[in-house]
Image 1 (cartoon, rainbow, N blue to C red):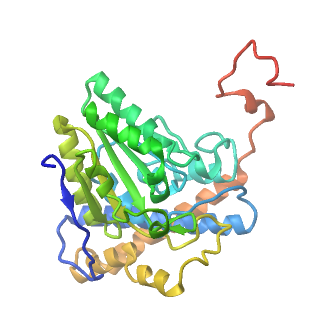
Image 2: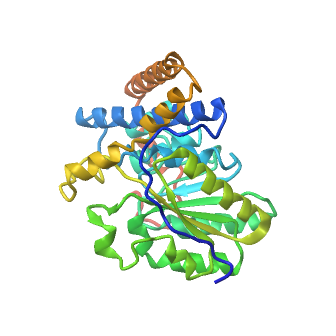
Image 3: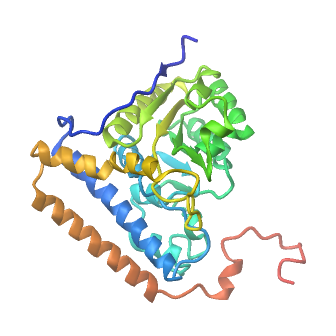
Length: 346
């Protein structure tokens, strides 16, 4: 299949690397990853205090995906993703206060307290969720890409999903249409190894998920999702291919979540040794080591970033706590309503 790119995954030992990018870029990655980590840690704490209710899926461990991706695309590009999505929304530039307030179910939340953890949305930031049904966002992202092509822009739609959603029939339908119509869509599977509590090896004969794209002659490759540099480079290659009018691209970003599938998941299906192995490759720690070992920035500069973000997250919690819950009348706003359907209010 001469139109497809197949790149085998390689195992990299965590180590400090010679810098390949500017000081500004490394500090941008570090700041975003640290912001996501602290936001998620505080969300877990607030959930434990029952200030956040319902479902809550945190992004701890996967921060390099959001960081490397955002530095490789444009703000005009669209993103649609699944329900482990706080980090992706923060990467888009969505307001920290509004995101935290949404977790609290407050009217100042990013979707007025109606979406909660799984359903952030921001037209302003070209961020289309936060989708709760497994794999439902794959055809949505494909449709957004169709709209961009129809309008004649050179924007693309990053369509993200987890390894569990790779089993959905909608993926195959979307892949087929996207290739047939050469749509500007970048498909990214965030493969953290487990669909809820079930490993990829137990659910698929194809464990190297990027190979699924090859069946459609779609350029496909695996990426080390624990390094923002690797994600940035892969997404940059994909974006260049797509913007040139060549159609879609598929990346399997191999990452890991340190916590359970959700806050209610004790994650007993994996060993402590396995989790520790990935924590030894922590993207924030490795990036910090790269920065310090290569004298890109000083410890004081990193500490200044960390302190700023800690205060930012503290202020976001205060903002969320002091905000009001939505008025009951808001139940009927921002929703589709069929005027002659008599049973909605009864």
